[in-house]
Amino acid sequence: MSNPNIFYLKGKVQHYAWGGFSYIPELLGEPVTEQPAAEYWMGAHQSAPSELETPGTPRRLNDFITADPQKVLGKKANDRFGELPYLFKILDVKDMLSIQVHPTKVEAEKGFARENAEGIPLNAPNRNYKDANHKPEIMVALSDFWLLHGFLPEDQLRAVLTGVPEFAALAPVFEQEGYFGLYKKVMEMPQDEVNAMLRPLVDRALPSYAAGTLKKSDPAFWTARAVENGEGALDRGIFSIYFFNIVYAAPGDAVFQDAGIPHAYLEGQNAELMANSDNVLRGGLTPKHIDVPELLKHTRFEAVRPNILKGEPLHDGKERIYPTPAPDFVISRIGLEAGQTYVHQATAPETWIVLSGNGKLDGNMPLRKGQSVFVPFGESYTLTADAPLVIFKAAIP
Image (cartoon, rainbow, N blue to C red; front, side, top):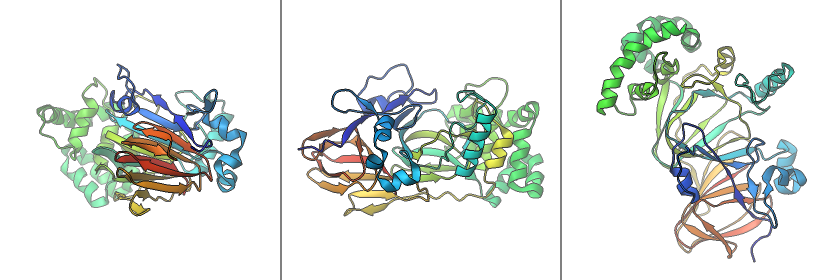
């Protein structure tokens, strides 16, 4: 007998222009169309809540939680968060995303209240704060994945500034004013100066990119990709491609992005788990609104040595968990061989997605590739693999 309190979940596909076309539809068993499928959201965020397959008609997950939050979330999570505190996503990054910084919880609350008081509509293009929450996030690579993550350590950044001829004038700025002074300089630089400084750099990168001789670890590769389709004004986000760490994550590797760490996804597919927020301060590689004073206020101007998380084994190695300092969420990967079982009781609300294989939940609830499931607090269950089964699970630590 299957558990009547565990539900299939139908998420929402987001069709952002930077997304790929086939990965998410093929995962979900849906037709590939001319429309990009960038993200698949599994959560209760008010802008795109998932639906539970409940008896009769589907029910929005946020409505289901609101009806009895203590029962669904558990007392501890309800007292602390009052809502499902995480948003779970699958991403297919075909084109580079904008450079982003996320605020702390305290700053998000202040910024959200301030913009509300100023009467800025929630959907206004110049709105920075969409809610009052912070947005730490972790991504686990599902393919070869490339991203920008934090400022280069001082010696490496110094080598870039002295080694790239166009940046000669910026080297003394870094020596005298550090990370903050350097970043402020390029983010506030008039557009004609940005064009003049970056144009020779871009002109040098494009032929090598076209010839296929640049490695993805080379900032020139991503510089050329950033301007492939661009005419006229050059995006000042190109400076960040040179100033930040270019990080490679192999499938199964994870990277955590805390508040204030500038970052940008460049290419690949991942499973991403974040606090339930949509607060983003942008720093380039985008035509969208960039609020430079606000960005400078919330960026952490410090050297970052990227920490690639490999995960820690649990349940006889059947589960691999990726701990972070975030209290809102934890992601893990469950991998079962055919015939293996995984028995568990949910100590917090869980959201899963089957990435490959098939099996059963409690003996008679079929699980197949692309299926999502929501498990309320306290529910016990048994997973059985009919064929090698891979599930990614979001929960609360």
